[in-house]
Length: 110
Image (cartoon, rainbow, N blue to C red; front, side):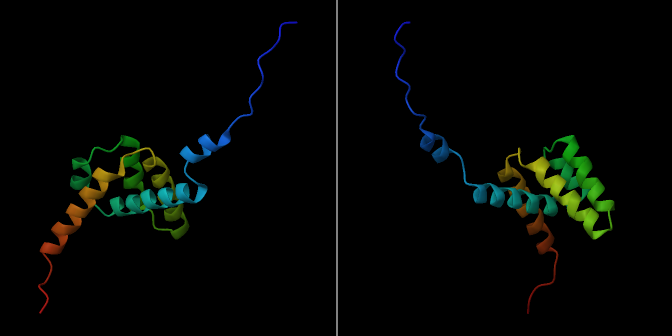
């Protein structure tokens, strides 16, 4: 039998250092879900300006029609799951711009 190469123990520390912690992943998932909830409040014309997948657009439209609290919570979780693969920066910038436009028409503080 030929001599085999020595087996080196697997070093999991490199893999663990690259992967975010469970808490960090949960925070990121909650963040994109909150962005999705803010997207529900946009008008259809504002959503068209964003480059969103069609499946997400359909989920946002459905969320506008739901009235039950538990149904809305499930839909928001679904929207968050759809958004996890997207880049949040352009969406956040569009939401901030849309919020800025809405404030400009409000009353001036005295």
